[in-house]
Length: 269
Image (cartoon, rainbow, N blue to C red):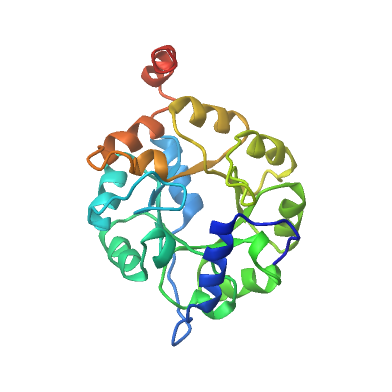
């Protein structure tokens, strides 16, 4: 790992399982859909660029959703999502590479593979448009970024603090996610993004991850410099199995519209 920080037991368990999983049988070759283009299209359409996450469950979720992942992804796109994130980690998040393949065939927006890739062969499991690399979990980020690009992936490099941001930039990252969740305590603080964002160059695509649950949170992260937001739990709403995923997505993608701004007072009272 690229950090001496203690990890929460749940995160340590996820990481250990990732190291034990087999990689792919051959090197993938991806013709990726452009995330920056998709974000620009959302902006042009008056939507907040949201990467909506298909996440059946997680160690921090209050329940599970057993809906067909393809139907969930389509519902998110109907709600205005600029891209889709798919958990492929099976043990702790209920995801699978097969679900990602089905989703990518069913939608026309970029699809991120959200998993815990720690070695190069872990990239060769399934084709996706973007691949998550977490600075804290890898030892040779520069080579992994290069290896991802050689396969056609757009690497999304996740950081949690300024030091990790510097590591990501030195490795050539162009799409960077700032995770508001502390992997040592699993606590979420939106000030994390606000503290890291000012140090990111303007030419980097900057994504706020975790903790965004309301239109007010969306506007706060956008004011702090987020080009896009990665949102899972607030859209999936694991505590309510029949929650409307399209509506949950739309209330975030339309958070900067006049109607949403006018409803701020209602939301917070």
